[in-house]
Image (tube, rainbow, N blue to C red; front, top):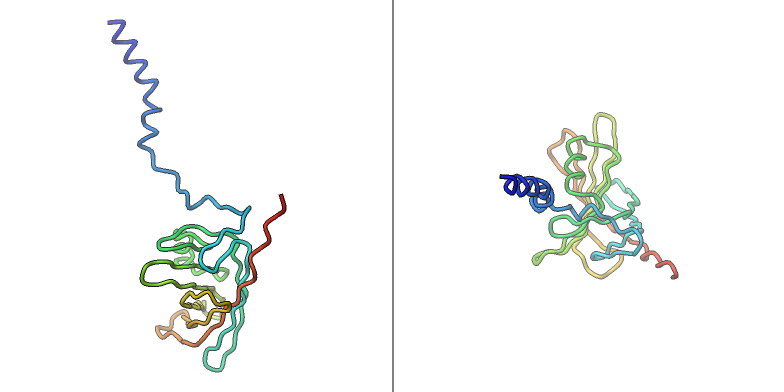
Length: 168
């Protein structure tokens, strides 16, 4: 009986080690590499993009940064899918997203930002097919709070050169 008790106690002590294999895997998309100019498509960590666009008679410009890149479905983005979803539900005025889609059918770069306006929020999205050219030319759309009709125009996005790697 003492041998069985010893084996049972020893098994209980090893149980936490065995349960670790059942735990969910670490989400590697939250690990951010800010020490190197990581690249996906035209996007580099540390880069900024200057956007200009035309919506009817309205001309606009915006600068968006690429502070980090996390993996999302079919590409990478500056904001995780979870954070994108939270921002959509909260309709935050400071939301900004730069993303690159890389699948077999489509390679595109997308720039999205919100702007607070009286009575709501405007969401601007510039989507451009990815080519190796800089600047990229795309379609600009504006979605207004409470308005079912999007306004469409054109946009031009110019990225800065990738940051210089520190000397070692």
